[in-house]
Amino acid sequence: MTKPIPNSIIWFKRDLRVEDNAALCEALLHGSTTALYVIEPALWQQSDRSARHWHLCRHHLLGLQQQLARLGGGLTVRVGEMTTVLSQLHRELGHFELFAHEETGSQWTFSRDQAVLDWCRSNGIAWHEYAQFGVVRGLKDRDGWAKLWRQRMQLDTAKLPPHRHWQPLPSTPDWESWQPNRSDRDNVFGALEPLDASAWQVHKAQATAVLDDFLTQRGERYHLEMSSPHSAVSACSRLSAHLAYGSLSMRSLVQATWQRQKAVKTLPATERRTWPKALSAFHGRLHWHCHFMQKLESEPALEFRNFSKMYDGMREDCFNPAHFAAWCRGETGYPFVDACMRFLIANGWINFRMRAMLVSFASYDLWLHWRETAHYLARLFLDYETGIHYSQVQMQSGTTGINTVRIYNPVKQSKDQDPNGNFIRRWVPELSGFDDTLVHQPWLATTAQQTQAGCLIGEHYPAPIVDHAIAARYAREQVYARRRGAEAQAEHARVFEQHGSRKNNPRSTSRQSRKPREASPQLDLLEKPKSNV
Image 1 (cartoon, rainbow, N blue to C red):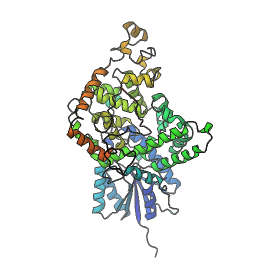
Image 2: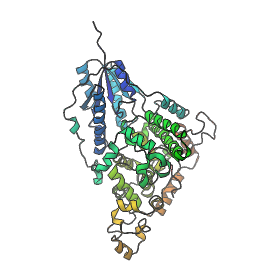
Image 3: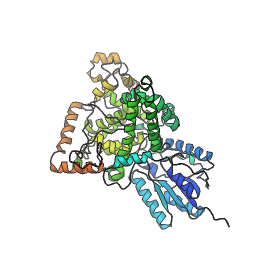
């Protein structure tokens, strides 16, 4: 009598791919496999989620469905609460084992996973989890993390077994037309309407095609052109959304970058051009991608509270709803800030330097607490990655205690990154009539100049919502006042011990190597700022 093949379920979360999917490979090796994705309505009602996220997630699910079909399998999509769905599957399949990737996500997803673990234990179900990215679960401090990251990236990519047994189950009817319930929060200030078709095409492009185009064509001037919103659109890899939804694995991306670096070294100097520096810069950002996710993995409370307790109470009671609304709409009176926000609203993406400037302006100029601004930006970013997001927003808000305080001067950034004002004129058309000088500071124009430009400041476009020089001085005084004293130094040393980068000698414990400072983040969407004030 033939022994029955055991049942296994691969639970897809934010790893929507077939290639280099360890959880899928192990499920197929184990037994007859059901590929499962669960649409959890409660997840899509969280304050960091929006309908635009679901539209892109749905696109990746349809792509995964096609990939599985080519392998002879299928994707089972259910709608409901996760443990309820598991109970249904238990009745349909009988005993099974569950396979999934670890997720560095929000408190909501952590609580959901804990509920799944409790359900598995109560029902005698084995749940196997596999590492995602270069994030290390259970890490106490950062000593040796960089070495561990490289070791993980060097591992062979997971290969599908040659013999595969599939057990597709019926999906929830009409799941493709499911939509999260719209709410006032989801459409706050009218900012989260569906994106333009051209913006969707960029985010929906096949990951392998985008990767090949970047590594062989677009990426040559990556390190030179990622700062300006003009050039960053093509100079950056544009793979961040694929990493966020898992349609591309970090290990595959790192190994493809290594292969390209080796190939470039063999080229004549006339063909190498700027490729070595560009690829080196890109590789550094891939490393920092996981470095910042590791922060939230090691201390999940960073989603809610400051890195350093020394900044508790600094902004909590100073929230100005009118300032927040103006910032959200791109109506602060600072043309470059407003242009960047409007670009982000329309495209679901903007380069890191501009993200940093938007957070800096909200945090220092408008003195807004990072929690509200973080939620709004999360709903805008199509490449929203929880692990990176909260660490980054806090770093740009000055609440980590181990990073340089960077207060971006919005006029200086405007002149540096958009010297001719073309980006401003495209996204703040009210100002299109001003010349290349006044477009950066239209409030300096005389009444006659404003009339000639067809834009009266205060009527057709707002006057600056705050005085940057005064606001920056106040913010700097407040932040640095909390960095003084033995208690602050001890607290910042604690933060560095747990989260700081060990750039040179990761195992060293010398006083100098453990100094509580950290370099600025590096990633495809992260770029080290120069002088900003």
